[in-house]
Amino acid sequence: MKETIKKFFNEKNRRVIRRNLNLLKSLTHWNNLDEIGRIYETDKIIGHYYTQHYDSHFKKMRYKKINLLEIGVGGYKNPKSGGDSLRMWKTYFPFAQIFGIDIYDKKPLEEKRIKIFQGSQIDFKFLDDVCKSAKSFDIIIDDGSHINEHVIETFKILFPKLNNGGIYVIEDTQTSYWKEFGGTSKDLKNEKTMMNFFKHLTDGLNHQEFQIANYEPGYFDKKIISIHFYHNLIFIYKGDNNELSNVLG
Image (cartoon, rainbow, N blue to C red):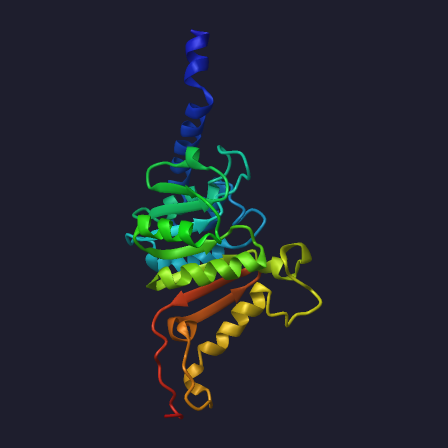
């Protein structure tokens, strides 16, 4: 009898039971992303204060059939560790398909409506294959390496693949000021940091007002319609930035 019980409560079954219990608990807080995040113990609410902003920006998409991609599954090298925020998103978006990518193998964390790919966030072919597999994305969240160069390169690759009306999110932008991640706290105008890269893009929102003869707007000028900065967090909205100047013509 003891052996039967022990066999039933093996590691795999314990994970399934824990996930089902968390799902049941989350249903009692179905309209509170902060509480859903705490139930799944994601650092988006434990350690950071991201969920309040996510709820504000994502609630209009909540009951739509969207595809969400999160870069960085968590848990480092342990294939059975991580996935907390993927499960949070699965609960928050009941009709969504949730995708994750990580440099380490996280396949054991897959479940219904959650698919995980292994690869680098700056590998163009890998990212292209992920996009082809999912067909399209409405939300992309970069919670990956947090290395400034990686964040910028990944954005350049993936933002063009985001659907119009979609939202691209950068987490943990504090590394823009940390030397070990390619940032700096001394040269706050350094063009290689993610904060300066994204701050520079804000000018493109107003490219219709530029007094530059024959100015040709670039892709980001034409496809970014708003950028929202918070503590360690950025939201970039994609659409057609074609609102004409009310003065220049």
